[in-house]
Length: 315
Image (cartoon, rainbow, N blue to C red):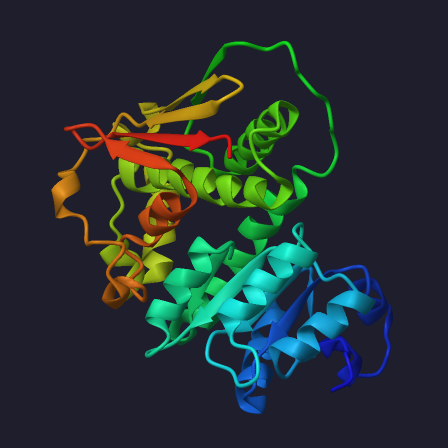
């Protein structure tokens, strides 16, 4: 199959020419219909364009010719499945993040792929709703570690503390800043930085939306528009607007410890669905915790449920 941007299906215009500078996502799926549906969704995401491969082997050949910003792959494919493709990309193209498209029957395979280096996942039945946000967050995490390469060989112990208001626009810059610190200490290989960034992004977003603003995942599942309308409203109203997110970071040559605490009412950590249960992969509730537990070496909540501690150790 020829690698053709989706936008070239229409005559060239100034807008389509501008799209040539857009970020690219390589969609890998053996189903022509599913490739078309995923490509149509990408086409609607601002700043993105799609390339296509019909299986894992074709995807790897295309990666040798053109490096996309993100790979979006199905799990169940002939010749080379999604898990094998993730492993091959991690080995040969460690800076290219991989997002999984999960469907019923691919749950166990998806769990293995996340443990082997996939950056995130989106259930196929929520692709239209969640793909754009997932592409943007994974891209932000992958790009933020490609600029600086400073080495702090003499650092023995370093602690920093940050206080954020409930502005989601602060999440990506803080994640990028923390990734740079991990890179300087060589605590993570380049592909590992992306995964830590995804985990931090999930923890900070959860602290703002679920912790300080008191929003439920169930509301997002049933009425996403109302979910974000309520978030915008609560950012301007007491008691939510006075709440802050506190982030503590301890760095040593051996490990990084991240503590994220919100000022919300908290919750019972025991009430969370088991994120390692494949049956919960398609649920919004617990998705962030699954990614955090997969990408960090140790994760724990306090008893009140308003603080999460995450540890990443040097390999």
